[in-house]
Length: 263
Image (cartoon, rainbow, N blue to C red; front, side, top):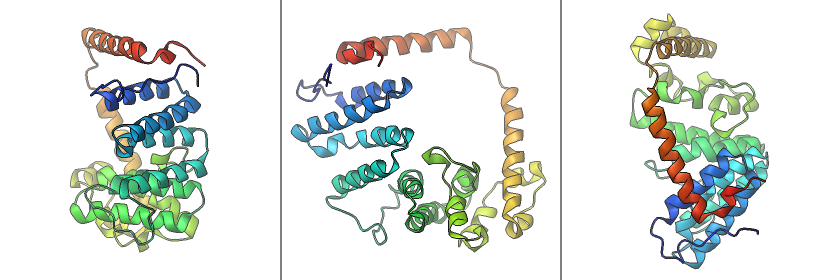
């Protein structure tokens, strides 16, 4: 590989994870997907040779993002399985594994289930999506406002992981959202103010999931109108933000010469 990535751990850099993360994030901005994959795998080799494989686990989320952008879904799923083997100390039985409710709901909803959807494993993906969502609904009575994107198929043809929802799986499996055990909690988990603003009632949503889509559409329209009335950042705020970004990039260029070039 040209312009090899430096081994910051070997150099005794105590800020290695943060600096590597910023470096990869810059590659993401530049849409250099193949380079991201190469960089993540090399950084993990450095970690395995130095502080330990666990230290390099943070790179998997970047690599998986790049693989999904390249539509290499099967490889992305294999890399997620490798991530899980490192974290858990061995292979997992995804149908029977007991997930830590305080750590894994996000990963099940936004990584495991979506990758299973893209690789055609809809039954297992649906199971993991249901498990992830169930954890949130067990912990709180009012989370629907934050989770509706994970329940409803807002995007009919999803293109990224976070657009995959429970409804996408149900559509593939010929199931009805009203049969989901947490449908009642989902419907009654929106703030009362949103029902008032949208004019949609909980009873309407209980009987017809399409009403949930209508509630979300009206809710987002109202939020957009509210956002249009908020003040924009000042010119001084924007200048300070650009200067901080410039200084960070200059430091990164010193560590990672490859950032000075484009493909």
